[in-house]
Image (cartoon, rainbow, N blue to C red; front, top):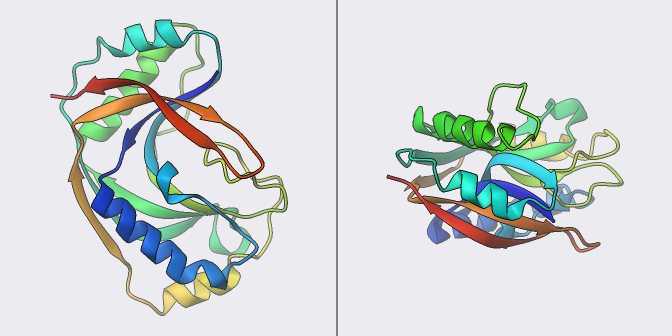
Length: 193
């Protein structure tokens, strides 16, 4: 199974982000746009493994306070001229990186590679590159300027604010890849304090 750990987003916020994405989609028609039903905040990408039961058992022991998460503004990775990812910015208090660190530690104790980079939460809206799969955990194979017009458009517009939510749980997800993009299934839920 291909697994990751994340936080689902409130439906009202999901709808606002989906409406925004639909309003700018025609400006970058060659990008691979992420389906709204898959929007989430990634805490840890685990990858292919048969250890879903062990992971779920380890995650049950995490006792963290639920973070408050704000979805506002947009950006590009790595930078607009050569971007391969278009995303929504996530602002959160210290509880979000603390939760991501706890998930990372639990996975590392099971033999999964610990994260070497600082946690930078974002919500992927679209990927560039001719081989982008639509999977928010897979890097696009090539860089280009397919987001150049979108970047120019967004510079002239006010940054959107999609809302703030309180996270009450995080989940272990299975990710199934397909030509139509990834499909996610929640296989375990873990409450937050």
